[in-house]
Image (cartoon, rainbow, N blue to C red):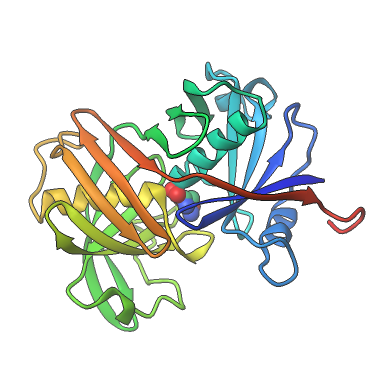
Length: 278
Ligand SMILES: N[C@@H](CCC[C@H](N)C(=O)O)C(=O)O
């Protein structure tokens, strides 16, 4: 099986080209590919498949040529991946499967418009963040309040006062499963300057990662709200935010009715898995 390895702010992915949807990609195969000791190692898999061959009726109707089939490292399926979609777009251009420019990528959360040049950073229109109220996470017995935000996938963005390095994220933060029946990605953030925050994240299905693109937008929303409650679920503050993650830096732009994420997308290696390994 041919693969490419890439990352966006060190949120890393195994990219599997599967234009005609021929791969039967099981959860077990994804987990083995992502295993950092016995596999290639990654936070997730990006299967690159033509939308019409996605194998998912809700996706096949979307008007985009390519579908980003995103899987978490444990093999679970997720709706969206903000770093992944930039890396996905970079791969399509690098492989000659798409021209540099602006076009839509199909995801389980709907269409996401990417702006991608021949090299360099990629910008993604991330759609309107949805404010879902407040929530709580616990880390090592301590409870942190946060803001629940949907970016197509679920997030809980918690402002903290302690240095981020002090948080023990070796284990999954606790949360109320009746509030998050599908699980949740939990971000912890601190303000470090004017419209500038730093964050760590514990991702649903992947554990602590060095970045989460959808999470950076959720954190920008929580930081911009600053504890206030918005007038409507998508009537959120606007403005540009710098978000530092352990793996680098991204820019989030909150605009009326939508949001944008800009950051790096890097391809680092390619190869073939050994016959019979998976
Ligand atoms: N790392 C991603 C998010 C991947 C999906 C997430 N773990 C989930 O299950 O929702 C990003 O960059 O957004």
